[in-house]
Length: 410
Image (tube, rainbow, N blue to C red; front, side, top):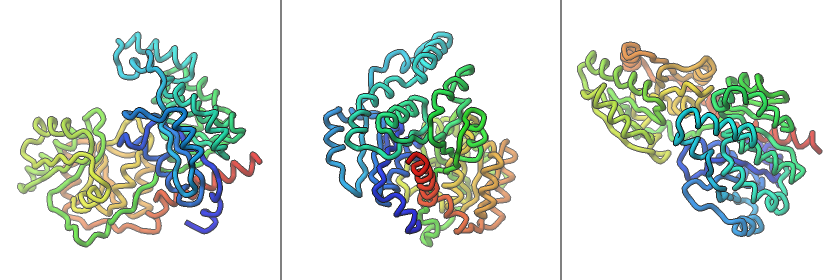
């Protein structure tokens, strides 16, 4: 962080909006929360507005009091009480048969522009007091869902401030066929768009005009050089969601094949919320290997696990344009396995920072890649190139976007 970057945020009043609250433990909560924290550390007055999740959220009066008691150097956080769930909530969770579910979703997009009216209506009750008391200079909402952008758009209008649309999900994958263009047109008053990757930029250009900037979600540069951690032979770690389970099945079958070829112990360590599913799949596809189900680990414990693994793996979400996991894993300095495989942007990032990222689409391919990794040397990470993707450096880029937007709107 440079002195100029810190100065540019001094006394700026920024609102970050995200449907997912930080205490959910879901990765979708991370991006806005981390940028909010980073901006606070640099002198900005920051409000993070989210849904309430499992908690009750703040009442309107509690939120107003928190806004009036805002302290410089501290993040103001308002988890909104949600509106009535209604039919949209049942459609989202698949409680209706497919034809009815599609009809309900289509109806909500056509009339309301989104399928989270409980979030939009709940947050809407807080926007006037936020505009009057917090008086934001700029509003940033992340997609997520289109209702979050509607909330950001409304707050910006009430505050007479510009708003920035953050695109971190695949537009086509989230919106029903026939609505992608019309819904995109409802947000043509955005001052700027930030996107999660170059792949997201290509996708965004299909639907949105105007200026866009790539702002990656960063990573925490933990103790990757911890000398007390030694690599455990035959140990592979898998982190995060396994989605439909197909990638995890390939991984387990590949580990079983590798175990048979090396005739030595092989252990899979899993860190994430799909432990029960992994255990069930392992019983079927790789009963001969060791298995450690560790759940969601605190950052330092996760770092130590990844450092002592011979290789670290993740399953690729086919609906995602770019995932944060490879950056987090490459930063550790161990070889990384993407199952079934990654796109060219992620491989180019790995090349830039000197990391080793390999694809494995079949069990046979995976077993061969593991043998190569075991016989090879550790990646030579270029720390300078790697540090370009930390939260702090990506916050620099976002700060520049905000300054550009504010100068243009002055």
